[in-house]
Length: 402
Image (cartoon, rainbow, N blue to C red; front, top):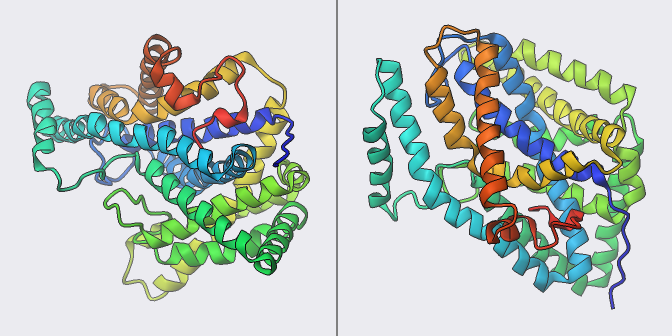
């Protein structure tokens, strides 16, 4: 019979919520980029500062999310068993993925249609909505692709992969012992060695090398797993899983350290210097620049992750009602945010305000509608039961969608 004891780590709930909410701010920034990147709309007010924010935030936000997911996944497996774990994930990941795609995909397509209309000088809302809904008539072509919900699909893949690997490893005691020992050494190194970000940056930068673009690709175009993205994020998931086995190492890892801060500054500085070379494929040192960029990107990732844990641990180790509420709401907010973000971006695109003011307007409007709908139609309903579990009043870390 399994025994399980745990001291709730409130700051992990905060960290997960931060990773999701940072995604909202990230997407809200994309219309203010100084160059057109294929986003739904490009604002009349842009800034290179937005490009720097988008680059740095993208290095670690999803890696952080999947690491936390791995931590809570192992916790849940050892509490309820593999069968119940898979069943709960099928409900809390699979239902939002399927239902969310059918509800949100037409709205997102509508947003892109309206954004194109906006850049030509006028927006026909009814025509854009009609065009978005009409895309459902193309099914099964592009089924379940083309939205921000790809993270749920990959989380389901990681859940199945980790469960199968765990069951296979358990069957061979020698392999189980070797894997456990290797995992303990890994998290021990990550939590104690000042050079750990440099070491783990090597395999990470190898994954980054095979991305289509510099940085991490968004794997939303196909249900066939994007191998470099899968390997990178599944690696983060496995690191989180291993950390849950050694909570004392995770406590040590979750700290603000001078070494990580200095490395993060160096990594970010290198990214800023090297990023312009992505647009110069004919440069004689293009491949060297890409290699250096990938390594700097990986260092930035593996320093900002523990620094984020450390900051959340410092500020939110004790329970706070508003943080608990926001952590509960964050899953819903992320699921529905993108059509709202695009709609607000289109609405403010031509306004004669500074980009920073409009960025706040987009984020604020999205959060306001998201929280209102959460309070009115999600929190105490069957939808809330699916997203956050049934024990919302005495919420534990197991009530997270990971």
